[in-house]
Length: 329
Image (cartoon, rainbow, N blue to C red; front, side, top):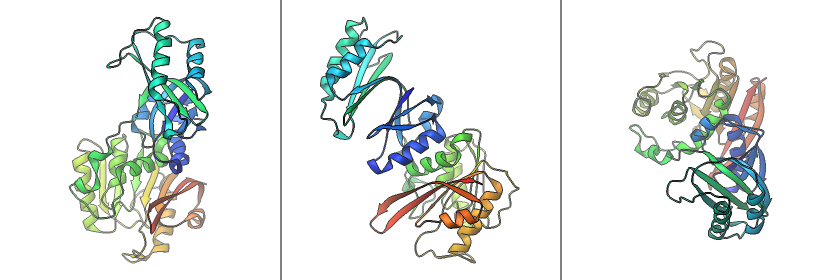
């Protein structure tokens, strides 16, 4: 069993759990605010997750107080060699437990069991996670790489306002293609500046993008060349409702549909554009994530998709993102 420390706010937890389950873990279940458990984990995929901070080998679960955690650690059976350190957290300040007091007490238990403490470069790290009335103890096994700030949209060689931030783009790629990664082909038929494709390429996928505007297609080429110099990618000008791709050529499709006043794109009305893109996506891939400013569930079902999940996420006062996680019927 494993313990997952989730990232984001409380409202992000359902998305975080599903991202982890699709891309790196199995049988993910909520344990407490900000925490989940999993039956299994692909630890080599944990660094690619957006909404999970770290994964630990679960040692046990108890009440959220220092005494109970120390008793659990004293009674637990485990085989570890080398030095240790304890890292405690009061997740979202929900338990009232002092992290420093927990680290001292649990460190004392480990010293009594014959371990040497090394706070700077330990061989093993014990994570003590307190959330509301629950404490999870586990040995840290893997952490996500939190480098999304290095790819801020405004820092890309090609930038347009309204570009999706890398953290969310990574999450949506994992939701769409997670089970197939890293050996996946991901297509974005409305690629814009290429943010989704950059994140897909960085987690190992072959990426293919198209956009109705030459400006965007060329801009995506520029960004992919900058961030994925050694990866396998293509970006062309194309119509999302008539893709020049063969049937079942991809593992997943992910796209960010036009928002708000962008109600007519090229020669298509918005409903025709999204409906046509959904139909083409179902032709070329078994899985998709569609992000939009409204629900497209009915259109997705008409195009041959099952809606596995839909998340509504606040961007700002006048915009909510609807994230549709789809699987082909």
